[in-house]
Length: 126
Image 1 (tube, helix red, strand yellow):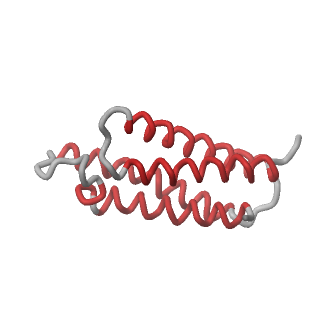
Image 2: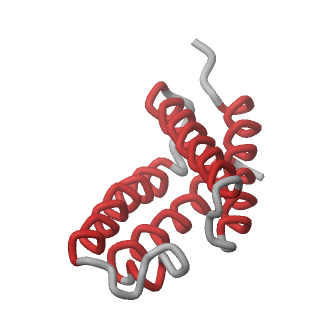
Image 3: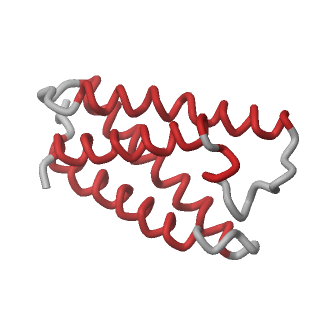
């Protein structure tokens, strides 16, 4: 897989997740968000979606860029972000997380591994 393809896929994933949190927070958080969630909780979930949209745009706009310090930062940022969320998913599995977490563990670990592998090949050596 090429780095541009990975950045494109990550961009689409992040825009879908971001829009899910913003537009459909209760449906998107099914099994974790109560049906009688407070307006404050819904507002909080919507806030989580906002940076996801920003990361999506960053990935999309950088997908065809050549080697640079900025692209290195984008690769490393994605690697760290997906690794942390994968670790939190795994932690959740050991603490009674919702069943859907098993799916997200796999997705987030795959993104982490892909960014690690392609990052090693594509990071500009300085």
